[in-house]
Amino acid sequence: MKFPNPHTLRQIATIIGSEYVGEDDFPVLGMNEIHVVESGDIVFVDHPKYYDKALQSKATVVLINKQVDCPEKKALLISDDPFRDFNVLTQFFKPFEKSNNLISTSASIGEGTVIQPNTFIGNNVKIGSGCLIHSNVSIYDNCVIGNNVIIHSGSVLGSDAFYYKNRPEGLDKLKSGGRVVLEDNVEIGALCSIDKGVTGDTRIKKGTKLDNQVHVGHDTVIGEKCLIASQTGIAGCVIIEDEVTLWGQVGTNSGITIGKKAVIMGQTGVTKSVPGGKSYFGTPIEESREKLKQLAYVKKIPSILKRLDE
Image 1 (cartoon, rainbow, N blue to C red):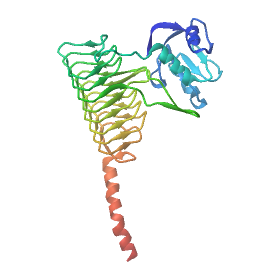
Image 2: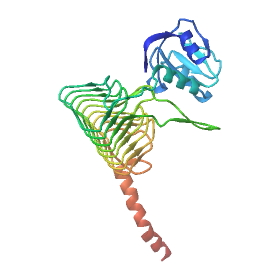
Image 3: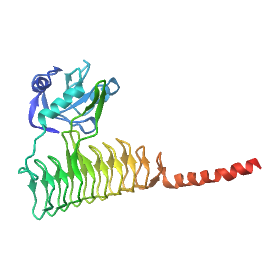
Image 4: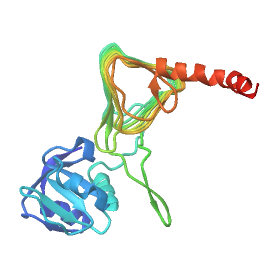
C-alpha cells in the first residue's frame, strides 16, 4: 500500500507515538507485508525469530519491538507493539468510508457493463467495459475489475483478511487496507468470497474461471487461464501460476506456490509447494500416480495378513 503522498520518518513516528532511529526526513512511501515490500515501505516484526528477515528485506523502514542495530540506508520505528501500530497506520491511511448508496458515486463503471439489481459497489471501485455483475454481489471499496468480467450472484469481493494475533484478552484483528484486482475475462461463480490484501492486492489474472463457492484468501495471486472447481479453499499469500487446475474441495496451506499447468485432483490437501506440469492427489499431497499406487497397496494388506496367518 502506497501512501497518497510521501511522508517522513518523523511524521510516521508522530502518528504512532513511537521512537525512531534515522534521519527526521528519511522518506517513507508506503507500508506492506514482508512478502511484498519494496524500497520505501514500512514492514513490521514483533518476534525475534523474524528480526533478520525483516531487517534484510527490501523494506527501508522496520517497525520493531526492540532496539537493534539499524542496517545501512534503513530506519527503525521502535514500538512496544508493532502489530497494534501497523493497524494504527492502516486506519490512518485507509480509514473505513461509509457508503450511502448501493452504487457509490465515486465508482467508475465502463461502457456496456450490466449491473443487476441489489448489487453493492463500494467507494472508488473501478469496473471495466462489457462486464456482467449479477444480483446480490458485494464489491467492497477500492476493488479493480477489468473488461468482460462475469460475477455471479452472492459473491463478495474485498472482504477482510483472516489474520489475527492471539492476546490474553482475545483475538486481535490485523486491519486490511489492500484491494482485490480481477483482470480481463475472469469469471467468478456464485457465492464465492475473495479477501482483499492486508496492504497489497489479491489478484486473479486474465482468463481464469472460478466455480461456485470458492474462497480465495488475502494477498493470493492466481495466474492466467486457471480453472478452480467448487468448494475449493485457497489460503492467504498463495501463488498459483498460469493454467493450473484445482478440482473440487481442494484446500491449501498459506504461503505456498503451485507451479504452472499443475493439476490438483479433488479433495487434495496442498500442504506444500509443488512444481508445475504434474498431477497431484491426496493429503499430504503427492504425485497422483504414486499416491494411487499406495492406495492400491493398502487394499492388498488384508489378503497379505490372511496368507501370513495361514
